[in-house]
Image 1: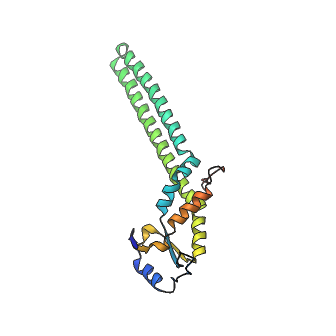
Image 2: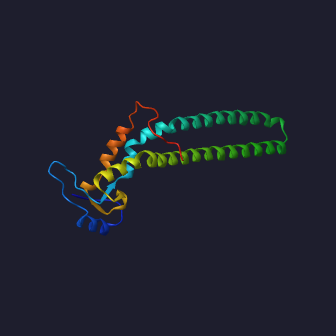
Image 3: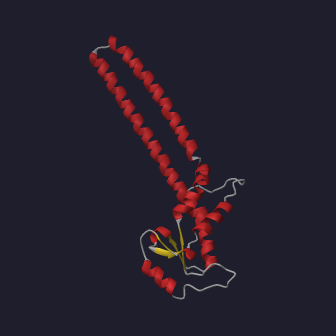
Length: 192
């Protein structure tokens, strides 16, 4: 009945579960009211990740960056071929100067492209965090309020918890319903 998860505060959880924080509900309600509920943030994000990335168009932006890299690579190959063809007509020192300048240009372009990729990844992380705060956290708050919870813990921070206080599946269901893909935009992913 108990699952072992993450690390953390088993003592606080057990104290809360053992005190007045848990009370049985009538037979028609399968839920137990608890002052503490847990949600697996990662599972919620994984379940709606496709919608988050679609709203941000991460794949499209990544494809654009890949196309830019291929275009630049083609230009650099042409420039390298031109430099190679000029070699027999140039003095060794002049060729070395041009070759060094070309190498420096290639290093600079690689650095710029790496920075663009890192920036895109950072934007993706910020979008996920924003989507969580703006679209998922309110759902978690409503569920916690409905259950009378005073504390919501990330499941990764708990040592053990009873399945009846885990609101992950309910959160996924409600967020998925709220993300009706027929409505546009499906998610607000604009960083604050």
